[in-house]
Every structure is written in structure tokens, then in C-alpha cells.
View 1 (spheres, rainbow, N blue to C red):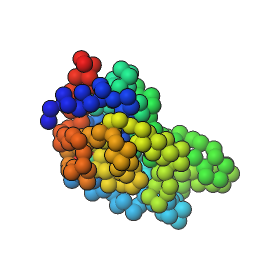
View 2: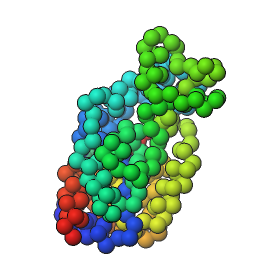
View 3: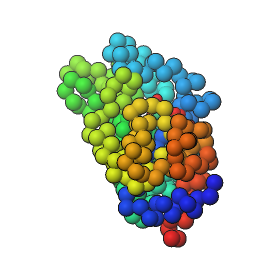
View 4: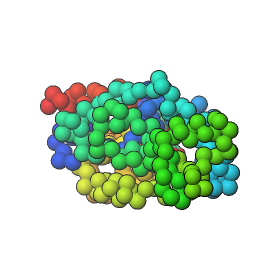
Amino acid sequence: TDPDPVAAAIADADEVVALTGAGLSTASGIPDFRSEGGLWDEFDERAFTIGRYRAQPARFWSDWLDLHGHFFDSEVAPNPAHDALARLESGGHLDALLTQNVDGLHLEAGSESVVHLHGTGTRATCPDCGTSIPVEAARDRVESGEDAPTCDCGGVYKPDTVLFGERLPGTALQESNRRAETADVFLAAGSSLTVDPASLLPDTALRNGATLVVVNLDRTRYAGRADHVAREPVEEFLPAVADRVAEL
Ligand code: OAD
């Protein structure tokens, strides 16, 4: 796919908004969820519900730490796709970066206007008193034999990631909807666009007249309605777009 028309649309736009998913980070060595060999092949999605955290906190935490071991491996670092989005932002061509990812790699790559729709995987919070601890501290407690990491007040810490059955953080969702409404170009990258409500943001953007760009290896539900579809690796296509925008 030719990156030039996408670059031209971005260069012409007043407001550009990106939505990213797990596909952004596969080149960093983190499997995505729904591709073959993805995390939902290795783990049962039902282990990560808010109901299981409440009913079986020790087992929930053990599974959560196993899954997120993929994310917080010391080898994991941002890849050229993260870098490209950070470059677009610093060049004044990306106004908001909405992400479903909890791996923190956009921030590490230097992006600033990041909205974490599904929370972040680096900390855990006590739902009873609001005390927050690094996830590593929770891991130490679990590994030293504590059932589930428990706060001094008696509450069981919950990771700061959105669990199935939980609402998205209200401010992040409002900000994302507002951004989708005002975007001239909406770029969805590395997401299967299957998990609501994040997957509805491109629809909001389209209804408000945005140009929709989808960069994803697999076909998405927006294939027929997007203005530009690139079924290419994000770590190749996004840098090509960012290079071109910088030349325009
Ligand atoms: P998915 O695993 O559903 O989709 C990732 C998409 O990225 C797939 O369609 C792949 O084809 C594509 N992909 C993988 N590597 C790529 C690459 N290098 N270049 C281009 N495309 C690539 O992940 P998400 O859409 O992020 O929720 O999933 C959404 C949510 O489902 C996640 O945030 C998580 C999960 O349940 C929570 O944890 C709440």
C-alpha cells in the first residue's frame, strides 16, 4: 500500500487522532490477543473478569501475573511503529493517541498525549482505600506466598487494567469520544477493532466526517468504510507514513 495518500491526508488535517491496539507491540515481542498463537490461545479470557478477581483473587492474580509477564519482560522496548507515532506527534501531526494497550510502550517511545482506554499494567490499586502500589510489589507478595496482594486496610489490590465486565475509565472514554468527534483524520492501527467501546470510536469519527485510515494485518469490520486500508505491518507502514509527512 502506498503511504503517500495517507501522509497527504495527515499533513492536510487540522486534527489527527490515532487508536492503537496490541498489533502495535507484536514487533516488540509481545503477542497480541486474537491472532493465531495470541494470548487468548494461551490463556482463557474468562480468567480476567472482574467477577473472578472478586471471587478467586489468588487464582486471578496468579493468571494476571502470568499473562502480563509477556508485557513487562526486560527485553521489551518500543519498536518503529511506536517511534513513528511519537515522531508524528512531535512534528505537530498527531493530536491524541488513544490506546487499548497497557504495556506503556507509547510513553516509553516519547508520545505525550496518550489516553489509556484500558488502563495501565504497571500499578495496582486498593479498591477500598485507593492506595496504589507498583505491580512489581504485588508480584513480590504473590511470589512470597501471600494469597492475593492485600492492602494494610484489608482490601485486595486490583491491577490498574480494565477487566472484562468492568467499565472503562470515564475520563479516558469521554476524552476519546471527544477526540473521535473532532478528528479530521482517524488512524486505527494494530487493532482487530472487536472490543467495545474502543472499537466504536472509528464509527464515531466517520459519522463526524473524518477520513478513516486502518492499518492492520487482518481485515477489520471497517474494511468497507475506511478511506485507506493498509494490511501491512505497522512497524513498516507507520514509519513510511511519518517519513513522508516530514518531507511534505
Ligand atoms: P487483538 O489481538 O484483538 O488484535 C490485534 C490485531 O493486530 C490483529 O487483528 C492482528 O492482525 C493485528 N496485528 C498483529 N501484529 C501486527 C503488526 N505487526 N502490524 C499490523 N497489524 C498487526 O488486539 P486488540 O485489538 O488490541 O482488552 O484487542 C483489544 C482488547 O482485547 C485488548 O485491549 C484487551 C483484549 O481483550 C483488555 O485487556 C481489556
